[in-house]
Image (cartoon, rainbow, N blue to C red; front, side):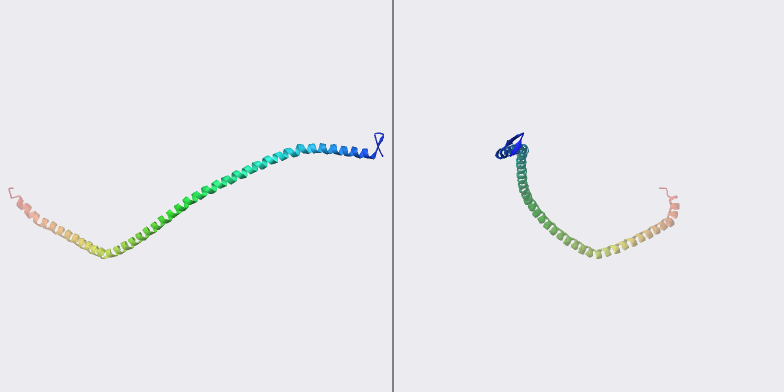
Length: 159
């Protein structure tokens, strides 16, 4: 038997009293935990719902992005095909231009005899210039030799 406040209690009452105190301590502790756990659980549920919403909206945005990229890739593919066709046309045009330049080079080679003829013509014109200069000098000499006597005779003429 155990003494409690001066009175002796039987063993079964002591056990019941200890269990009652343990029960009250557990209830007090459980109430404290309820004040912590329930709001935390509620906040976790809200955060989990918000996380689900974020993931769902991200998945929707990625879906729209995939659709947009797909449509843009279709347009890009058609533009690349058009660009490839245009490059093919440019290649054909450059080949035509190369043939034209080769033809011009051959034409320039055929102009060489003409160039030699032009050089011969140039020499002839220079010779003509020298002849004309000599003729001018001869005419000047003739003018001086005939001009004086004619001047003298002009003084006798009334007209």
